[in-house]
Image 1 (cartoon, rainbow, N blue to C red):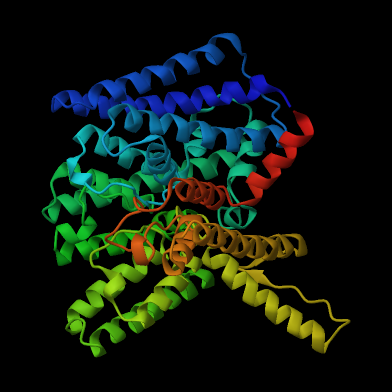
Image 2 (cartoon, helix red, strand yellow):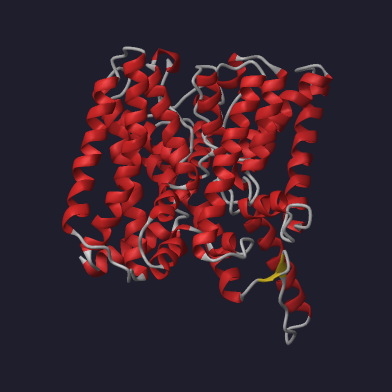
Length: 480
């Protein structure tokens, strides 16, 4: 494995982060804030470290798979380290572990926070915090691949390690076109939501920050009480609409906007996903109404918002769902595990894998009845190979095992079971809020430091789809 290849790619990653650090610093300078220096200093660190590979390392066009895995994992780790610097230098609630937690939570679009007073942050730091969401939502790797002056083979190698095989099935494009489609849809949705929120009465700064968080399905807000601060039905429904769009496969969204054959109206998986999401909304809303928690219209408003917020891993809150009846908690926990679709910015297990699991179950039941039969199945008219089916089932098992182990560790650290279980699921799913001490209008500040670090590992496992981390560890052991 050639380290110069990794360093060269990291230079682009650092440069991309530096752009947003300097924008955030400019905002701080404009408002004469104390965060200007930490943000500028962090930006210059990025520039210094990215300059060396630019100067001394030539472009390399033949990246192999092992190098692709290393580039993806090391890029994410480096980005998270860079992201924590402005927090750590600014101080306040940001201790070393808290800075790391907030940075990892931002880039992985988990949206969990250790902050008790978000509104006390300078605007420049708030913008940087939201920027980590937007950078991490579609992935800093994707943005870099868009401008990478490497050959198609290198771009394809890195793309294959960043995007799951099941995600690529609905794109039907070459590597460079896939990257362009992702960025076009991502930027377009962000711009549209920003305009919509401004028209709904939100100021431009809050609108940009909340759009960054929505389309990245992240959940960082500029307010202590998240979307509940605005207490606006129209803002809630605008955010609901864009959370749903951000949770649908971007390739199918692009096909819908451009009139292609592959679109959301012809996708059976999209239809079933939306039906399951609607079922969750109905169940939670009815329980809220019949339990006397809200009137009928408010039950729909709050029920829909929380189900879709957790079901797309966005993690915004417009109410304290921890105070709701236990039945609603069970439904919300299910959607925290399932989450939205492959090819979106959503985290979690993802609906496509759940759908594939039941298809596989049906296949196995058929084979029990007809042992000699040759049985195969499709998703969106795409044949699912035995290899992809096996990899998906292995992923599901690893996913469940991971949040079980995290729950055990947190309870060992004397975190109560409800908090530990929901926090484990919420972080590996990159969802954000759980229940108990980490509920929708609370935060993770009371989790012990070791527990916070464990949860950041969970976030990275979820964002990098678990198997990439394991593959990297095996490569590292074998090559260094």
